Image 1 (spheres, helix red, strand yellow):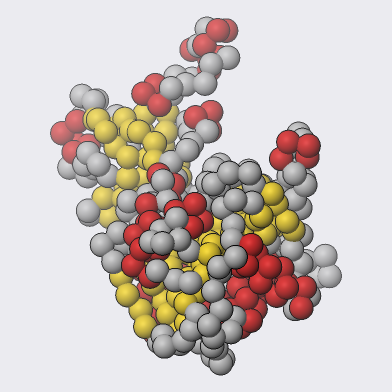
Image 2 (cartoon, rainbow, N blue to C red):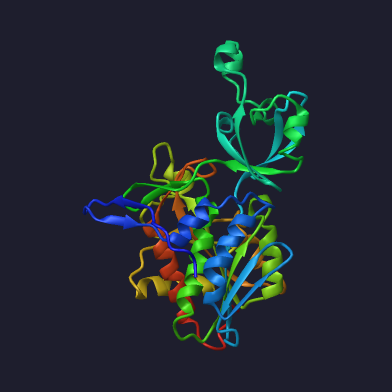
Length: 367
């Protein structure tokens, strides 16, 4: 069993302490840049492996947790454990590190950040730097620096000194962990998509304690941020009858979001249920019925094209998989301080459990 520790707490409007689940906190604090998901894998292994009927790993680094392995139909949940990161590409003579980005960064936010570099000998701390604003011309101050104009300073004096602790190809993430802000609202470096990975794995942990007709597998997938790569192999190897991907979606209740362009989605309003060509109508209806039957709040989003999530890859794997998508409302996506209401994560877990319990033997997504 996982080692017990003090969970993060905050005060709610009702003056009661809100306690974040330890599994979620550990997953959020795990450093898992795309292609180097080791720490998040270890968290999933520790919390889930002994709680389910079957557990496996694959060559992509995916983790699979299954309950009721002889059940029918086969249902797959998927949430990715990789996050945005940096990869070291060059070390100059003074020992400054240059890098490329892993995933879709807002370049205006990269400089001036503390970072943790994952090396074979452990974590190396550093700071992303660029020329100070005082040393810029008025024209330069208006520009967003290109990646090659930013570096990582690890407080050494030469390439030789740097190479003793850091290697080309080492990866890094922002050194910014989970914190509760107010009530059940928290901020973290990588709610995208540790929130979804937690939701799918926590759902199978709860399903392991009850009766099911369906076989349910949760996959913690890798390399989503560079093209849903882990989901491709996960969907192929599992070949389920139904699947639900869980990712984050944009909460558009912050200033400067035009609802006419982006829809209206509220932090704290429950999971966002996607509808559109990427979504099988049979599983969509299952999700809506389960939410309404169990009084779980939800919001509906229309997406006219393949989504930028694991659902995109899963839907067209093998001979086609009846795929749904739940998105956890999130503010400030792909920044070092993504914001989520943890109650939305809990409602997502509840909805996954309810959908799994609603499936009957012989059901398929043919329409």
